[in-house]
Amino acid sequence: EAQVTQNPRYLITVTGKKLTVTCSQNMNHEYMSWYRQDPGLGLRQIYYSMNVEVTDKGDVPEGYKVSRKEKRNFPLILESPSPNQTSLYFCASIFRLAGVADTQYFGPGTRLTVL
Amino acid sequence: KQEVTQIPAALSVPEGENLVLNCSFTDSAIYNLQWFRQDPGKGLTSLLLIQSSQREQTSGRLNASLDKSSGRSTLYIAASQPGDSATYLCAVHGTSYGKLTFGQGTILTVHP
Image 1 (cartoon, chains in turn green, purple):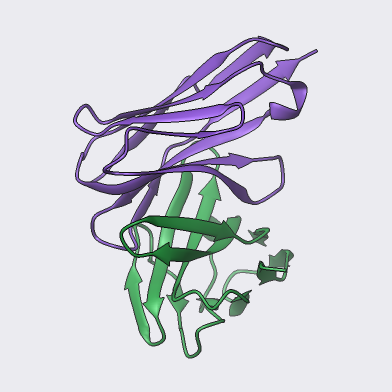
Image 2 (cartoon, rainbow over the protein chains, first blue to last red):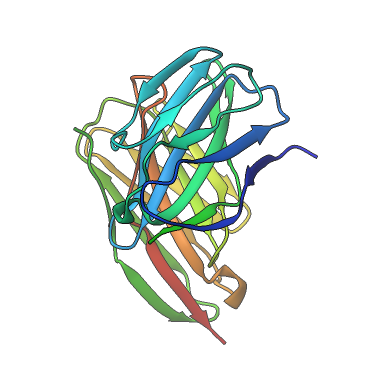
């Protein structure tokens, strides 16, 4: 089954304790992306990756890091989490049919609370 | 910077009614526009995708239109059902590949 998986699904942590949210896709997509969703602000793009070792900033990259060492995985790293990073996080991968269509597949989300 | 706005923010209708959700964007230089559905506590499900060269797409009771020159898209839902209750999100994919901007969504409630 084609899917995007995220772990953990729920996480409560404390300020300053480094954490990693994993994202994995089994569709061999080149493009992957991370978003955060906050009430009243909608979904905002954090980082995206167009292929292995190719990443770029989205609209709200501050406080986050990413890496793309292999095509299937795109982890999101919070080196020193702060309460303003409390949010619902989504990972997505894109199927791209050049010049025809791009379809985004979203993971189930990770609800992060930073105390 | 691309900005995407969705109107209305919330909509409550009786079952069976036809309805229209609106999405507007400020930069008409887009690659495509996508409509998503999000159920409470869940991820996003893609409903329809319209390429910048297309005017509309249809899937079952859903029809999405795109007027790139005016920066508008509409999602038309025919014969609404309680199972259609969800948040509907519009997202614009800019010509700089990889850049996706979402609207804040319309919360739809269809009551029996």
